[in-house]
Image (cartoon, rainbow, N blue to C red; front, top):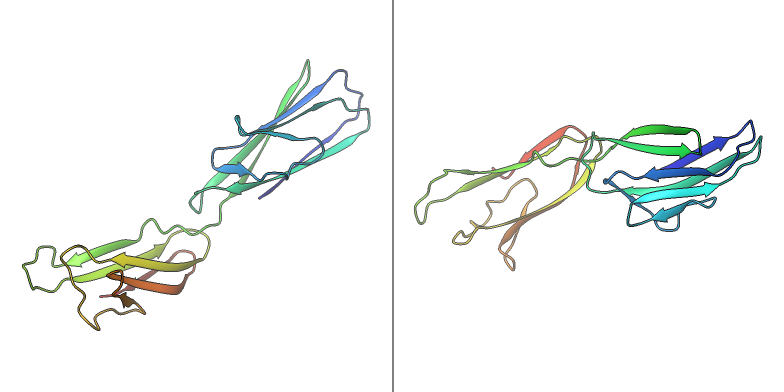
Amino acid sequence: MQFTLQLATVPPRRGSLVLTDPLPSSLSYVAGSASAGLVYDAAQNTLRWQGALAAHTTVTWTFAARIDNTPGGTVLLNTAYLSDASVSLCRQCGRHVVAPDLRSSSKKAQPQVVRGGQEITYTVTLTNSGLGASSVSVVDPLPAGVSYVAGSASGGAVYNSLFSRIEWSGWSLPPNWGYRTMP
């Protein structure tokens, strides 16, 4: 995600201006991306610039940040602060995160209580409730004491006997889409 901060001065400013931009915890600064003297403080997760500007001057700062583990639909707010000896201003921008959100996916077993030798049917439901499409690969290890019934996997699933697990790959889930497999 690219950020641009711009300041244009009309009257001459006396003294030093300070620009700070504390990044929200869901953003990580991309090393080396800051421009125009903007400096990143990793301990504070904050970008900072300090200096003087002559009258009728425009300065533009840019930097990039990576979105970390944020579900689709989240609004990220970033606030920058500009201050001098007498005035303090803040500006805020918000962006919707367009990302897949597979947290509402599930796995169910039927019947829920079994005896030795009885078959269990597992149903895996993948649901993308996010705003972005997702390329999906699923790995579902069989629980201890459970053996695979040959030919029972469906929905493009294959049994991996080396790791005793069911695997699916190559699915594409569009936003707000559910897909049910392996009945």
